[in-house]
Amino acid sequence: MSQFLHTKYASLETYTPGEQPRDKKYIKLNTNESPYPPSPQVVDALTRQEVEDLRLYSDPEGTALREKLAALYGCGPENVFLSNGSDDILNFAFMAFGQDGAVFPGLTYSFYPVFAALHGVLYDTVPLREDLSIDVDGLCGTGRLTVLANPNAPTGLALSLEEVERIVASNPDHVVVVDEAYVDFGAQSAVPLIQKYENLLVVMTYSKSRSMAGARLGFALASRPIIEDLEKLKYSTNPYNVNRLTLKLGEAAVDSDAYFRENARKIMATREKTAQALRALGFTLPDSKSNFLFVKREGLDGGLLYQKLKDRGVLIRHFSDPRIAQYNRVTVGTDEEMEAFLTQVKAIMKEEGLL
Ligand SMILES: *Cc1c(COP(=O)(O)O)cnc(C)c1O
Image 1: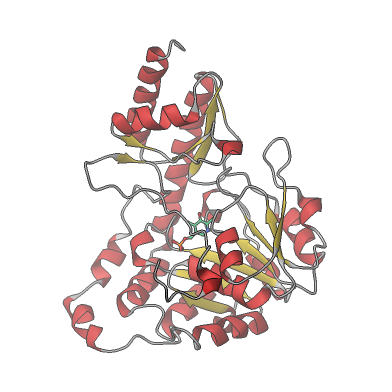
Image 2 (image 1 turned 90 degrees about the vertical axis):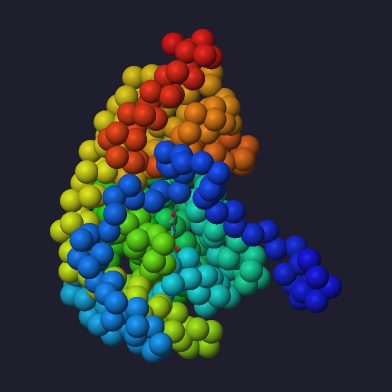
């Protein structure tokens, strides 16, 4: 740290992204990326002309993509906000709507407390219930910015649309952010509610189900006044926040939506198969509606499993937080990747005298 940094940032605890190792080739099941490439239409959208046009700024309004997303989600383009990854929108949400403080579940996306700290937003957390599910009543009527991921991370558990609506309806004077990064893997989206509740902000990303984590594209769907607030912050920081190529590829992805739905279906089928195999090996795991599994095995230390798998070329995500140190989060890859993962898990369990 330099002597020049504003003192308010001196003690900031930053977010720790999952490892992106370059030392060798791993079966990479640690950052919830898709194992499948984007659709052929997305690949074809990147033409020589598009690259040459990089001399021009991107459309700050992203009009073409907003119109396509609006048609896909059944709202108007004025209800769509685009960003450089959805983390950007979450950042704006804490910046814009956190004046009275914030509330989120005790175990959720570990970026929320970082954004809160960055913007000086005081927050409380509502502990998960014994079965790791979100305490819906605890998130109702908070009288503050309320943020939840549905499905939640890293548990993968989803709330029903009725439960989400109860939280949104109970907090009419504050924004409720529903982070739907994983919604395409089997949960119900809250998007139909944006017409009914002015305080609802639904956040989505191209990083998971649309196989475009590296393109950095996120979007929000909400009532017009909320979108205007986000635009105010965007035009005060980075008006061209989405680059030309990403806008183009994002449009092509909407045009090939069926391709992405089919990938999500494949990933869900692989998830169920893998979950069953893990349960047969004595693992316990919540009923995931996402593209990852949150797993633990009695008698097998979470950190040890992570390290031994890494030594064998399989990367999963281990969290140092003592409350979940016995767990690991395993991204659902292809059938072949998950078979390789299970083979190594069994070998490790034999070594440990558990099989
Ligand atoms: C992956 C993820 C995001 C977003 O990521 P971007 O790549 O910035 O769009 C947001 N919320 C949760 C819970 C996630 O897991």
